[in-house]
Each structure stands twice: as C-alpha cells, then as structure tokens.
View: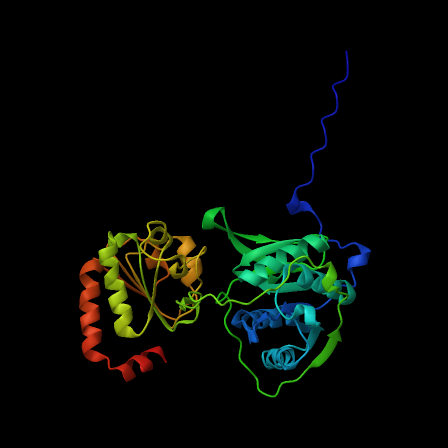
Length: 368
C-alpha cells in the first residue's frame, strides 16, 4: 500500500498576513501631505487633505507635515504659511529652479529623495491631474503601495492606514492596507474631505531641502505655458448650489429644464454619467465617482436614480433634494428631501416659483 502524497500547503491569504514591518521601515514616522501649487496658486484639495491628515496624525500621536515643491521665492513660502494656518506642524520646502513648472521626472526625483531622507509613514496627495501623475511615479519608484481615489481615511487598531475606496465599478467599498511597506500612500479627490477650519497666526517649523537635480538629465522641457481657455468653464466642485439631471429626463431638450432652474438659482448644473455618454453634457459637468465630487449647500437631483457611483460624488452635500418618479429609487435612501413626481413637470414649476421669489441679492443669500 503506497502512501498518498501530502497535499500542498495553501498560500496564506492577504487577510491573514500580519502587518509586521521590516526593521528598516520602523523608523518611518509622521503624516505628510503634498501641497499642490501650480502657477502660484495652491489647489484647495491640499487644505482639505491637511484636515484629514491632522486627524490621522493625532490618532498616531505624530506630527503633520506638508511638502511644497517649487522654485525659491515668495510663492513657496506663502504656500507654507497657508499650510500652517490649516494645521501643519512642519513644512518641507523643496526648492529648485527646475521645479518652477510641473514635470513628472524632476518632481518624482525630488519627492523620492525627500522621502528617503526624512521617512514619512503616510503620504497623501490630491487626486488631481498633477497629483495622480506624481503619486503613481513616486509609489513605483519607492516600491510601495498606492490607494487611489479614496473616500475615507482612518487609522486601524495596529496603527496602519486604512484607505477606503469604491471598487467593482462603484458597487462596493473596499478598505486597502499597504502591508510591510512604507510610506503608505493614498490620493483623495477634491471635495471628498471637508475643508478644515483656518487658524490665523498659527506657525510651525520650516525645513528646507535641496534636491539633487540636473536639467541636462531631464528629458522633458517647458517651451511655453498656454492656459486652457475651457479649463474653468464649470465650477461644480466648489459651487454652493448645484442642479443636476439624469437619464430619466428622457431627452436633451428636457435637460434644458435643469439649466433653466440653475440659472434662476445662480447655481452650477451637472448630470450623471449616462448623460455624458449620450453627449447631452460635457465630461466636466459629470457628477459622481468617475466625475466631480461636490459638497454644495444645496443639491437638487432631477430624475437621477442615485446608484452608489453617484452617491459617492454627492453625499457630502448639506441638503440633497431628490425628484424621481420611482419611490424605490436608491437616491431616496440618502436624500434629505424626496419628491416622488415627474421632474419634467416639476422643474418648470420650481423655476417659475423661484424666479418670482428670488432677486439677485436673494440668490446670494440662498448660497450663503
């Protein structure tokens, strides 16, 4: 009688892996946030991330630091002062004329050099065009993990970063950990996190860092800066009032009713992903997981079912008013006010009622 061969040992699952850092990573501490500055202007997502970073740093009992890359001068110093007002303890100023304009190669080299020198435990960046481009390069160079487009950041019981993001087309939310590697990196889209309170006169330490960069070794060159005339045609992310429509409006002619109401309210207008796919609106007007995340004081959603992809983009609104013929539509599960009726019939009536009641000054009061 022959012995049966032993069954192969099963590989351990990621869930069973212990979060035990190698010795050379145990000196990594503190929470860092990239302060994104371009053409002398700090992107607001940087301040939103400082608010989230402050909570993480307090949970871990460490310092919150910001990183500002750019050419030496008042612009980079002013960005650091702004960061102190929003809760930063330390500002790393990475200064070099080569960093005057964003290019992936020098920015990636400068950031990885800074990380290797000062060893942060957590590194957060905005999920903007610049942030997404830079974060991927930095994570790849450092051989660490990156969780993109997070909707929630927390510290778990053993002190690891728990980064939550939508997955499977937005049908599920999953929490991701970077096991056994540092820094733990994540990007967050604008308006996902609330803007923290600004404290005037708050100060912190400034640490200047000179990166090892050589223009002759950088392939890309800046020939001329040409602004995109269409880049600011919508301001959904930072609008106080937003009116949006969905596929339930049935035609682009009916979507004009959304535009009309937005005009009377002095609001921005937008729509769900199917409207972009059908060409009713441009991609800059799309609201949801793969579009813009908004946090208005008032959001009116007309004929939008409210699947999780859309909910992720709007649930930070102070007041959500949903209009839909389907009383079982998912949007009624998170709207503050629900109206079960045909939006095509209700929108003109709302527009006329607001037109009669609101003067231009009253619209300002509504937004306030």
